Image (cartoon, rainbow, N blue to C red; front, side, top):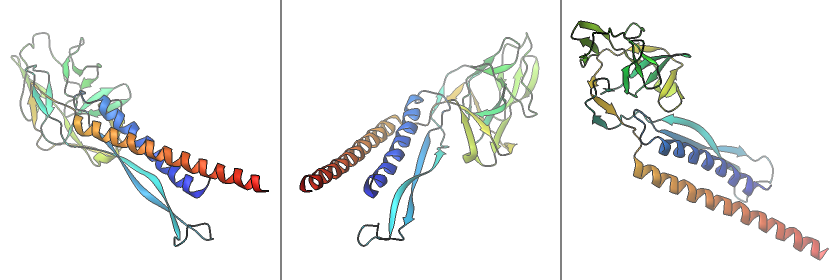
Length: 245
């Protein structure tokens, strides 16, 4: 493969990655608390020490998949009226207990579990400020949650919901659609702002994301055609050379 094809191939790999990320975003448009991912590419410059570079050029620029970062912008808040639906109005994450350890989430679809704890839709217990599950008693039927996370019922105060902030949000590792593993330390938010009866939607803008997918696909097709055209040119050159010998 010649240099032109190699450069185009690096661009093709990057475009494939961009379409994969965009496809995941589109699949989670309706997932509460989902945070869109974005790709970042850069040039990888290969200095040429011989005459292999094109005339007038001393470097060849390949496309490099530099990083994938997460858009931390909050999604739209929607009133549901369900007392166990919660949303964090500012930065921060709820903390839930999974079989792999504590995980962070912005998905506020909680409810009472059979064992009396408050948990998410997959059975992960919602944790309080001490890192323990919040427990309901059989007689706790009217649940109120204040803006700072204090959970109470008609029988009194039950605990305080923990809202944590990671030291470096960009280093959160996604596990599924809405859970994150924090590989850096987390701290309790000094002034959490929790809304009861409200859900935060996905922060993926549908129209913009579909447009991004169409542009990614168009660029992918163009690069594919470029590589095919270059391969055809090389093949024709070889055939003409063989025909004249």
